[in-house]
Image (cartoon, rainbow, N blue to C red; front, top):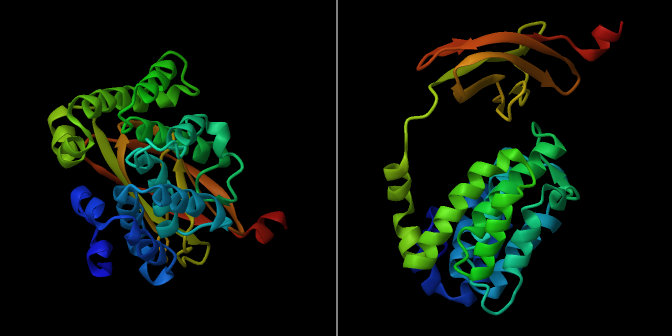
Length: 284
């Protein structure tokens, strides 16, 4: 079972494992040797759909990490809200309550962990949007009512597209069932895809003044929520950046931040490199 779970299981197959599988899957979720598979573990645990699934994932979200988390851990953590709605709430275990609270960004402000690039507010808004996605998977009148209320009064303007999609998904789930929705979700996304604003790619390197790449430096597009972490060599890539002129900001621990203007052209790649001075040298 462990070998299968590491690759991720389809909903029906994971559901058939039953509640007894949750402790085994939880063990994988806590084993750092399998960290790259943690996002798939989160999904599989939710697919099993037992009350224990909810408590395991909620505990993973709130009680296992503190301070800055690495990229693999972050990907697993942000996978949680969006899949919680898969867990049946018929026994009143609190999934709907949790996701309703999670739709409010303020709910996430007290998380003990954070990500390198996102500010606390940006992280809270992201998790609120993912909670809304989770609400869309709950086939109950209450979830539909919560989404209707959010449609009229979102907590943030950036939630609107998530709310709209969650309302559509919720109608699909209630009409055709969760199994049908999960088995056909990727095909539905492809069918609904529409031409969007043209995008381009920004790539580059963040180095110190001697030209050495700065590992895990961060870069962000000012005025947006786009950002990325550099690799160990200081290389970074930002994909699907809407065309336009932006200020690109680079920073790293112990170094002064720097910004540069960048023009993104449709279906093209622009290269922007940074050299960051050490803070000690700037202070002098």
